[in-house]
Image 1 (cartoon, rainbow, N blue to C red):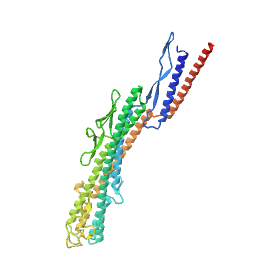
Image 2: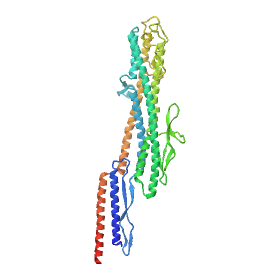
Image 3: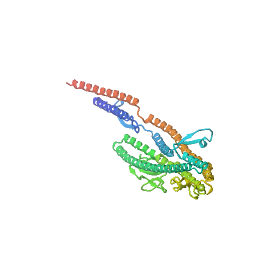
Length: 477
């Protein structure tokens, strides 16, 4: 039998057990708003039993065997994977929004049939490239109506300068956007290196704590999971665990962290032509990004935005070539000929020929050196605005630009749709994880009352034994 003192010890163990339950519930409640926290539970088991002759085994109460963390590794891995997807989409969305804003155009769509996306797109803006192109060729038309009117010629030159300025501004903005995206990539690389170091450090702390206590370092594991999920937003990662629970992290197939050791770190580098990519520092291994904000930045920068800039440069280059070829064959009011209308090669350096600036009489609108009222070249220049260009897939200058801007709008619309879908998936997984691992205030309050009542009952056991011991002592007086 336990005897009075054995029973007293059993009551003391019970007090400690219920007190531990209160402490764990209090810890849970303290972290109810901590997104990286997974709730904990005390694991209570019966203490060792003692044999009682003729009666069998007698229990000695209960004790806490462990503080268990409620965590589902499969759900954690799914949430981590979705963070990589959402990180990529958010980066793509942000870059495309910047690109669209840099065009200085507002896209208006009118759906009227299966080809509405291609044919019913109109652009609006205070003075964007769409308006500038239309205004330029309308100005050529006005000069054709009044070929000897210097006022119309002056308006033409001003409109040409405005269009050239808009091309240069657009190209500069897109170049600055590329620089911004490169800076964003470098910033993500820095953040990823910091997180890799944090994960390696937490691996070491977890191993040390669990070796010393023979229990689970729950709070440190929560912190590590939070760091892993932050890293997943930056890059698609692969997390593996050995048979001895050593955690490793790899990016692009290259292991960067194993246990407490950070094997390598990341750096952005110029892969040629100003294309910034990511590789490892020590091995110099280029990494193929398949998710996360770094992948979204690279794919959008080198995809939709690079194509946008290339298309605008191609458009500017063709306008320069066609207008110059037609204009050079004409004659000015002074009889001069052979002058180009534009200078430059593409959107980055297109300007009005400085020889024409301030000299409207030098606009070569006539097909004759002697007939000042002739307007044949001006009419030909005006007709270029409606000419379907073979090198632009049979589209006019205006149609090609509309198509270019519509492509950016369509890319953004597609990413927006994917983002909405991803938000639904991520919300569903997060809620599912929270329902299992999140802290429920109602449940914790119930546990607090339960442990409180058990603590009071355990205290009553000790009080009762104390009274019994007092009775025994009094019997010998």
